[in-house]
Image 1 (cartoon, rainbow, N blue to C red):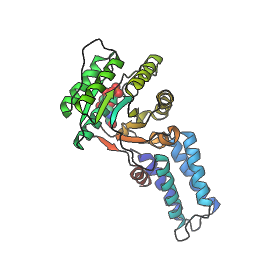
Image 2 (cartoon, helix red, strand yellow):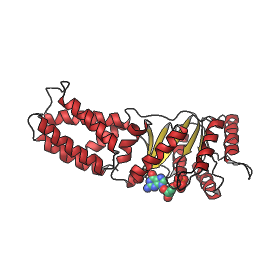
Image 3 (cartoon, rainbow, N blue to C red):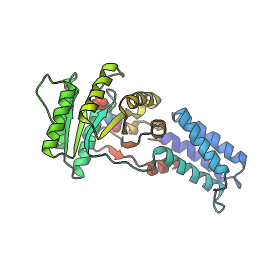
Image 4 (cartoon, rainbow, N blue to C red):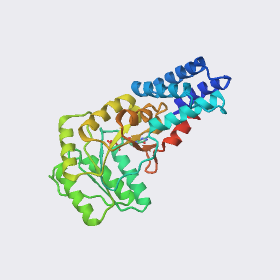
Length: 290
Ligand code: GDP
């Protein structure tokens, strides 16, 4: 995860360490290297552009502290701006019904299991259910996962629509006094109108506290485009990036907040149920800068 950025930024910063003064040339050379690193890491073009603009303005401005070396000054600015685009603060999940949306194969079901486990360990009362009526195997996958983790899976008689399942699950969660109801939704191989209509209707009926988009970090920019479509139609409240363990570029992590205006809440770092971490922008920025 993020190895490419760490390596490239490391190279830029060690070059900077040789510079005695922060001249225009030193700054421009550093920014050029950083720009290349960001684009190679698959960071969204507009995000990279506005990031560099802010770093340049600050590096050239008076706010730079005189008692720091040129390298330290640039590192400080780059660090702060990284934290800025990553989202500043870690965000928690709001209690209530949490709807998970996204395409098939991104890791939606696995993520629900991971988050259910995490919340349960924190002492919250959690239940899960699936509205993926077209794929009984997907429902069964979540049911098995819930069993293993030890949280209730709400199942209902056959023949109900996705919207009906969502409504009943919410009712049941209320009766049970559940803190978090995690609801899986249908995943398709691509965005289609029927899926979006179904999700919009579920949203209207159950008024979720969160709508979380699950994105596969390995898909980079493609995942960002799909997330934008979901965001326009549903109004996402957060993103989980899965498969960060397999993505050395990390571009999506840097692009999501700035491009969608939606926080990354968790990252998936493996296939096991424990392989999830809250997203801490400052730690990620530190990791990138090595
Ligand atoms: P869904 O179709 O979106 O519900 O996807 P699944 O939850 O079934 O996951 C699809 C595949 O991705 C499975 O093989 C999971 O084990 C794998 N997967 C999910 N999250 C991660 C992750 O963070 N890291 C890795 N390496 N694999 C993951």
